[in-house]
Amino acid sequence: METGDMVRMANQIGDYFKGYGEAEAVKEISNHMNAYWEPRMRRSFFALLDQGGEGLSDIVKKAASKVRRPAEAA
Figure 1: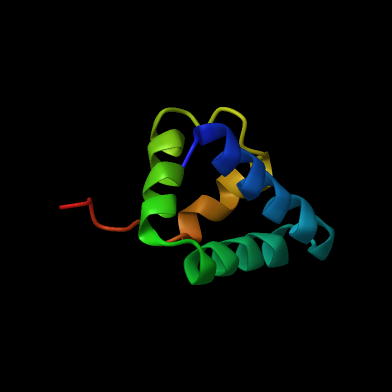
Figure 2: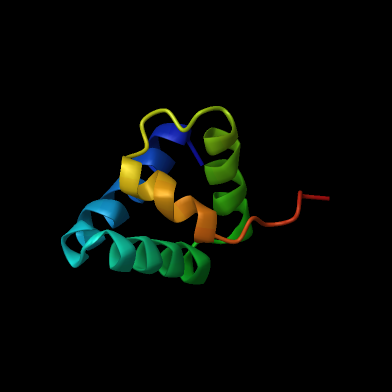
């Protein structure tokens, strides 16, 4: 997945839930990513975060602590 597409998708999820209040939004963003993002997508997400998370919204960065980090690809 292209980094720009992943950033756009993550931020769209963040935008959808941001009206829930920060704590609830963080929970719902991470729940969504854990439920619907396949491991390959989450690996790309964490690779970007590990490099500083450029382009990701603050609420998405906060939610990252609750997103399951998948094992490295074999």
